[in-house]
Every structure is written in structure tokens, then in C-alpha cells.
Length: 448
Image 1 (tube, rainbow, N blue to C red):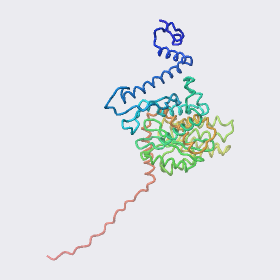
Image 2 (cartoon, one colour):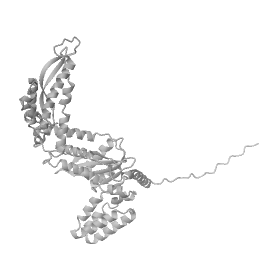
Image 3 (cartoon, rainbow, N blue to C red):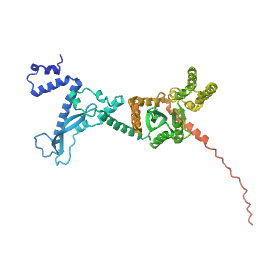
């Protein structure tokens, strides 16, 4: 059977003889809309269906028009202009109104409330902005819904898109910073900073005992300093983060972050220094010709499962570098033992490679950089926090369980034993004093 298009039917009067005039007009309008594409035609049909749905709901609430109904609870109240959300824009429609019989209040129509909700509008705006669409080009990214609809559409200007984006990202920031953490059993906590052209945000990523990654929070400051990191960690603890059972902290080596960990989480918490950051810091002090050899020796040593042997080899390398490159030797010795924390805890294979660096947290930060690449000027701290939170939540949608997650339960036990051993070592042994026996006084024998 050959398919007959609407346009060919409308252009052939002889083919539609006998049809009512209303059908003639509808087919003509359909054919006109089809010239702008299938989506434009569908939008036109959809708006027409929406108007019919609104009228049908009024009939259901008020009753059939022209029929007396003594039990009705509402009456028609004419029509007024309204707006519905359509593919990232607001489109005007004529909506019917209904009021209670006593005239005291408006009767809400559920159909109109559903299609007029702005949630879908902000969802589309947020999605496009996170995909890299600028506010100036937002209107150009809309679907081709037809010239008539585009002429009357609203909420596509630069200022309107900016307002909606600010509102939605602020909601996301509040949601992220108020999430309760009581029920979250963390095995690993990662901290790192992201520079946003003169401002800095410190972000926290948690990995639970099942290997699932969770964005925990963030804090803004001028630099990656101890005060900002301490405030962030204190906020996590206030929200219920339980670290009493033991958690491994992975850092990039910043002294400010290390100090914040000691102040908030205690001196006994095990800390793993990122080996990739340490490697870059050491190699930065070396000439190009010496870097490949030192890089190879560092990676070979860090891959060893024998903690004492690896520690001896790193110290030997530092001694060798001290003669020709004292700066590289000093960089290697700083925090040397903490680069082997996962090895000391008995972590092996895939999980060891995952937790020896801050790569999981860096991956989340890279998402923040990607979605904010169009930002030319960071106006204030609120803007930095909103964009960073949006990027962290965007990254969460792409998270997968870490490689080697099956060994996280063993890691948690090892961390608890390590903390208990450090506590025992710091607790002075109590000396038991045995009381000296004293001779009982002689009791004089009473006379018989």
C-alpha cells in the first residue's frame, strides 16, 4: 500500500471531497506545519491536543456546558493567557478557568498545573549548560518547533537562562551540603583542591565499603589553606560522618590538608600520600635526562608488596639524589613513609593501585573543569561553590565502583587494627603497685 502524505492530500481537493470544512482546514494547517519538519508538525498537533484536554477537564470539574446541574461545585470563569513548558522554553496558551460556586477561590486544573510546571524547563536549561552551551547561544540550541511557536516563546534569553541556572545550582549546592552522612560507612576519604582562576575550592570524595563513590562536600577559600580544609572536615563530622571505625585518608601531599586531618580526625588516622603528585614533585627538581630513570625506579619501588623493602629502596634513592640533586632528595624524603601507607596496611593488586593516588577525586574535579570551561570571570565565592557542586553531582551520575572494591572490607579491618595499635603505643603502661603487707598487731590472750 502506498503512503499518502498530508501535504498531497491537502493539495488535491478532489481527493478529499465529502469531508467536513473543519477537516479541510485542519488538513491544510497540518500540511503547512509539515513543511517545517516533523517535530514542528508534532508540536502544533500537541498544543491543539493540550487545549482539548484543558477543555475536557473543565467539563469534568464543572459539568457539561449548557446543562443545569444543581450539585455542581464550580463554575466556568472564562479564559486567560497562560504558559506551558515546551522543550526548554515557555509557550503561551489560552487556558480555561474555573471558580468555586461561591466565587471565593480559583479551582486549579491539574492538567494545566502539570504542563505549566517550571521543573522541566530548569532541567533542560541545566542539562544544556552543563553540556557546554553558553547563555548567549541557548536559544539556538532549541528544537525546531516551528516559526509561529518560536516567535511567541519566552525564557530563552541570556538573562532568563542565567537566572534559572543560578537558582537550580544553588538548590543543588544546598542539597549536597545538607546530605546526612549518618548511614554512610566510609572506607576511604579523599581530599583535593581545584583552582578556579584566583579562587580555590577544596572538595571531599568518599568511598564506602562497597566501593561506591560519594561526593561529600566542598568549601571555598582564596587558597588551599588549613582553615578551609578544617572547616570542610568539621562540616562533614557535624553531618554525621563516622570516622571512629577507621577510614583511610588519601591526600595529594598539601601540608594544609595534612594539618586539617590531624586537627579534626586525629593524629592516628592513616594517611596515604598520592604517589603521582609525589612523582611529579620529585621529577620537577631533575633535568630532563635524569627523569625517565628516576620515574622508573619510583614506580618499581611503589609497586612492591614488601613495605620494609620498598621503604629501604626509597631511602636509598633519596641518598643517591642528595649528592647531585638535593632538591629532589628533599622532596622525596618529605612524607616518604606516607607514600607506602597502603602497602603497610597490606593492600594489594588492583585496590592498591586505585588508592595509591587521588585519581578518583581528580576524575571528579576534571568534570568540574569541563563543565565550567566557558566561565570567563568568577564573580564571587557563591558562584565557585555552585559550579563546583554542579560538576560534582554531574560526575556522580557517571560514577562506577572503584577497581578492587572486593578488598575494601579487608582494608577497613586493617585500618581499625592500625589505629588501635597506635592508640595502644601512645598509652603509657600503668604500673600496678602491690601493697606491702604489714604485720598484724599481736592480740593479748585473754585470761582463761
